[in-house]
Length: 338
Picture (cartoon, rainbow, N blue to C red):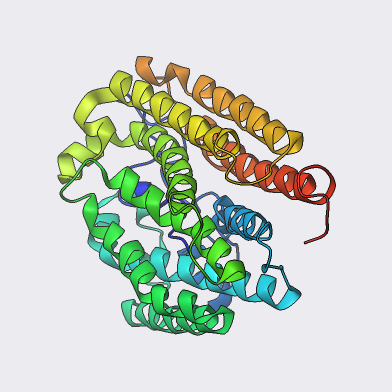
C-alpha cells in the first residue's frame, strides 16, 4: 500500500539551517512521537504513527475512484482491511528504515534519543515488529482479493528497498514518493480486484502522489544539507544546494497538480466540481508550504516552520482531496452511493 511518510529525513540532522547554527531543538522527543514508556508507545514512536495520515487518505481515494466501476462497490469489510493493510505496510517500512539507519542515527546528536540508538527498543524487537507487520500486510492483502495478495510481496520489496537508496542516488525522494504512490493503487485494486481501464489510469494516479511526496521530501531535506554531505547521503538538496532544492520542490509540486488535474481532464472517472475544488485546495496548501520555507535560502530555516509545513500542510492536502472526492462521488460526480 505505502511506505513511510517521512523516512526521507530519517538519517538527516534536524534543527539546523543550511550552513547556520541550530535553530530548533537539537535533542529530546521528536515531533509526532508518542509520550510514554509502554512497549506500545515505544513502537508507535519508532514508526511515528501519526504520519500514517499522510497517505492513508490516498488509499481511500483509490477505493472511491474504483467504486465508479460497474461491478465495484466499497463494503465495510474492505475499508477495515484496507486500513489494516496500509498501516501494517507503513509500520514495516518505517521500522525497517530505523533498523537500516540505526548507526547513522547514533552519530547524530538529534537522533540519539530515538528508540534504537537509545536502547529503548532493541534491534531484535524492531525486527520482530517488521516481521509481524509484514505478515499482517500480506494476510490483509489476500483477504481483500487474490490480486492484492499476490502483488503484496512486490509492494513490500519496493518500500523496503527505499531505505538503501539515499546511500547511492539523489532520486531517493522519488523512490519514497512511489512507495506512497502505491497507496491509491492498492486502494483501487482492493475494491476493483482488477487493473484499471485504460491501463495508464493507475500509473497517473501513482505518479501524482509520487511527485507530491517528492516535493515535500526535498523541502524537508534542505535543513540537512551539511549532514547529508558529511555522512555521504544523497539528496537533491545536497546535490543542488538550497536554491536548487526549493526550485525542484516547486516543479515537483506543479507536476503533481497537473497529474491530479489530468485524471479529470482525460475523463478517466466521471469526476465533478468537488474533485476540482479539492485540487484548488491542494494548490493553495502547496503554495503555502513552499512560501513557508522561503527563508531557507538565507539560512534562516526554523525547525518549527519545517514541521508545520511538512506535517500539517501535507496531511491537509491528503485529507482534503479525499474528503472532497468522496463528497463528489456521493453528491456530484457519481450521483449514487458507493
